[in-house]
Length: 102
Image (tube, rainbow, N blue to C red):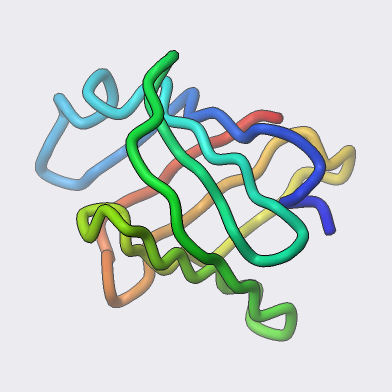
């Protein structure tokens, strides 16, 4: 439910052994639709679209994009006020942590 309520924009991004990843990934956004589709981009540019699913039991977000570089799986954490999400890359992408405020 919470994923499809607004745009989610990357404010902080950590990639182990790649300190420049923060600035290179700041401004990436996702707009998730309730029907399982999404669009994504960076700043004002749209860069991809595709489908998403969420495993509620394991808190896993699966992103399948038309842009294969965006295909990801994340473990999610959500702040109690539902304004900040943290996505942690899983075994499919073990060295990514993204902090996305609504």
